[in-house]
Length: 273
Ligand SMILES: [Fe+2]
Ligand SMILES: [Fe+2]
Image (cartoon, rainbow, N blue to C red; front, side, top):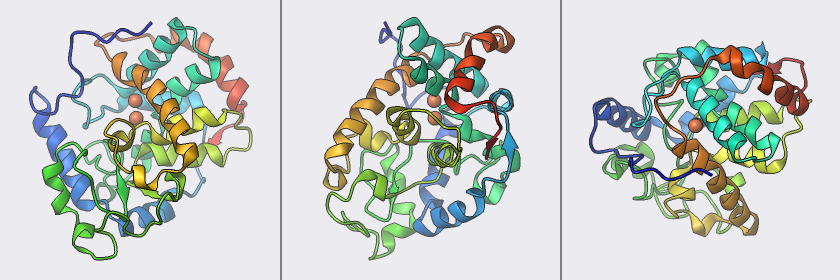
């Protein structure tokens, strides 16, 4: 079983990387607006780049997540740590696969642009806790002092509790800040051989939605199904967060175990990113 270790995770106020983490959040909060998210959907949801899943995993060997105060290894090591933690606990094979691929949306950096926040050096459109655009930003966001920098918080259409949404409209029916969660969810939803169960797709889509799943915000937009969603996402989150450690894996050694899982749930045709 995963044990919550002495080490405290998600400490945003001290440590060597805090200035970088904080700056990424400042840019993310200042620039992720309704208009930006709509622009990103148009530009990035083109499903025009075929790539094998294992190839995408290998590309994250070059990606270090600038929003993560707990990890400065390449992202691929975090993917394997997450999956291996689930495997040790005998969690279902589809969940182990979800652990292995949950951050693959970060491959956007391969064709990203600095002005979109989707490159190795500008990651405010790729990583970090997400929030909803189109309604008031909650104080449960990390660095809530940056909320007022968001232009939508000075727009009467978007700066009230409900903003552009109806009460209990359901979290699926909201616009999320753009990042690797929403991107990968859409890529996989579009993949014709996708057999990942609904729980797994929800884990992928909402794992970075901390103000909701951990902060308890946005209950006034939730429907009945979202309560179940939250249980699934929190179950996933224990592994996403608490398996983080300095240990590296040899990619080739774990490949033999995970390739059949990829094939079982995603087939062996390329996925169109
Ligand atoms: Fe993630
Ligand atoms: Fe993760």
